[in-house]
Image (cartoon, rainbow, N blue to C red; front, side, top):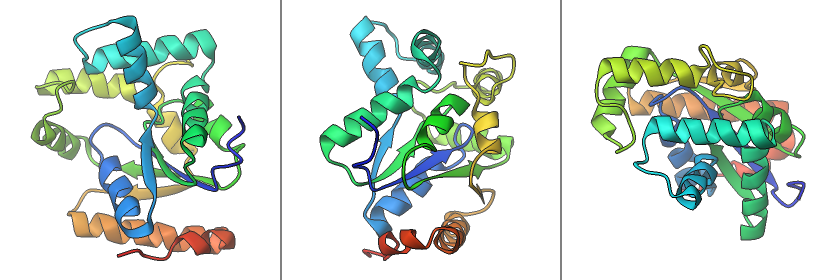
Length: 207
């Protein structure tokens, strides 16, 4: 499948706990998108392999293994195939962690990539507060996972969020409060509409 049936796809990339989910939720609530994460494919693979417990490290290892076996774009391709079967037409795509995924997604019609960034200390605080079961629970654990996620010491098919951020089409800062973040999102939407006028049809608020 080529992704031709997915009319609009907005990818969101960024380091751990930077606020990607908040941006996705905003687009879902106000502009009628559905959200999907490439990590769904990884979680399914972990389940299929009978692996446990589901830690952040295990998810990273499994994603890396899939990319090394099937190519850097495998998670993106499987996600697009799944979304086409679901009949989705307006999608926010999270969990992008490798440039191979971005390169593939940029071959699809009407795809744009937003990068969300925030200071590391703020991200650590947010990660502790959200308390997901697979997240690290202390600073050293966070630092180890965060550096790997960004691409430090990783192979080409591994975690490379830093490189994905570099090739994003638009950038959003999330170092302040939620309202400021949403203001940043609206500014980027204005930029998208200027750069790609055909996107204007989807950016009419539902609420």
